[in-house]
Image (cartoon, rainbow, N blue to C red; front, side, top):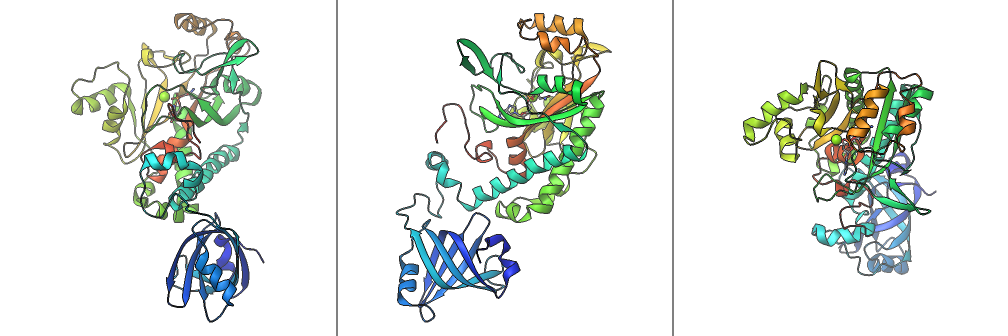
Length: 429
Ligand code: 4AD
Ligand code: MG
């Protein structure tokens, strides 16, 4: 019976068939040890010269790294074997012999690996990251589904900007120009009018002009939006979601975190409540380290790091000055220079994981903001409509999936958190 490696523990003593690829191999006298991988795990299989015919033993000798194979044998519990089980092989078929696989188990430079991403994904660490990615996305969905949110996905081809006009990717649309979506938020604000609480999850695009370890030009964002929710409510929601995700990964993906040598103790500290500070308080913290940082400026990576160093948990920074936030942010009724915005800055210097806030819900004020920002009134007519027909206080946020994965996995650069990253000048493979 064909079994997957992650399930072999259920087949102790039984004869099984494995289908996969050769990960690595070593010899000792009349025995060959083949490390076989099938995507779900890696298992050692032992082929002894005395126990198989010459043809099979010869195949075990000839087989090269990444050759595809079918192997038959008996599962045997063995404390010393990696994973606790090994396969005593009786048959081995090579489906195709791979010649000179370019990624050997030794260390390679990132410059070498990036153009080989289609093959690099097969390595142990990349496999673990992709498995965490899958679980993290599922956890996000489960969190919102469990609370009755409705998943309403938003368009990718859009006529207007959400997060400023400097990072738009234009696309020719039958002679007109449209843009790849920077965020689904504006459409979420429409669907909450129909469904109350919604989320969208999909790829978003930003023509980022700088190379950093946290920016991709195509990244995935999870965006919930809730009618009748205020700024504090949206912080509660982001906090609950973050705790839920981390708990789920700790429960379901411990093996992967071990492969990634993640310090699990740091993740175990991610419990409620997270600190909440104002932009002004954050500025005071930053200025202790960066004397030249000016009140009113937006945070760069070193500033976010300076904030996060004070905490072992993510921290909410709220009430940013209006000048550094998007046009749709509602202003603080007590201070018109501040917005009801919030960012969640992750620990360990990972930077901003979440951006969100309470939205402007007044027709006249929103129209004024659109004009002040020199945006096309026509393009936002439908968005203004939402303030004409039953407007209400509402809030939401966006979680950058790749940054969340980088944090949970403890890896520095987001380029390893997505199967095929897109970055400034990098679109191959
Ligand atoms: O802070 P941002 O720009 O917020 C929005 O787009 C809102 N409209 C979301 C909302 O309220 N529904 O982006 C949200 C998050 C950031 O906190 C960050 O984690 C991630 O998206 N992000 C990026 N991730 C990778 N590469 C980039 N270029 C990113 N830009 C933003
Ligand atoms: Mg932001």
